[in-house]
Amino acid sequence: MSFVDVGVIQSSSEMELSSRIGVIGSAIAKLLDEAKPNEVAIERVFASQNLHTVMGVAQISGVVVYLCQERGIPVTFYTPTEVKAAVTGSGRANKTQVTNMVMSILKLKSIPKPADAADALAIAITAAWRGGNQSMDSISSKVETAAQQKWRTAISASKKL
Image (cartoon, rainbow, N blue to C red; front, side, top):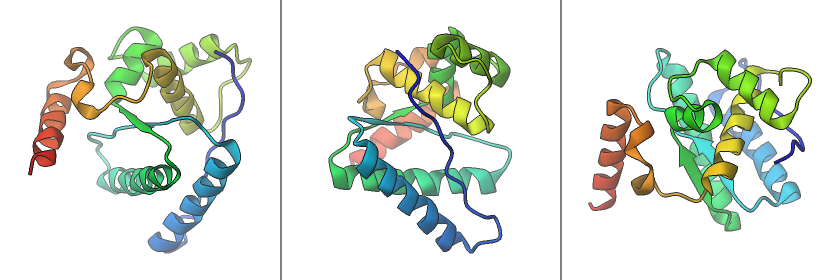
């Protein structure tokens, strides 16, 4: 595994929500068309103290999934616990431990900035090591919290409706 590139797409917090999603979505579409990835990996967000942040991440994740589906690019979802376990060996690792392991694995000389860049690299490493292209039903419960297991069960049940 080797480091190629990492970046973070941002929009102004002053913009209207629909405009922000449009700006980010357009940038992601352009990136997908230029990079032509074989797969995209996304961290599944389960909970956060900040509902506004969770909603924003969920909205953008939906845009990414849609754009990938349009292009025939498979999308794999990983839980935060699964990413931590894959990169550090512990599903309870903290952000600093994950960042340090990302730097070590990819032989980086400096911490990727902003912090979201290191998170993205950790997700990419997880996808590479886990083989990617997993459905939510195939995620091992060994690295999930009880809440994550309930979420996975609910997602599976909703598919049967």
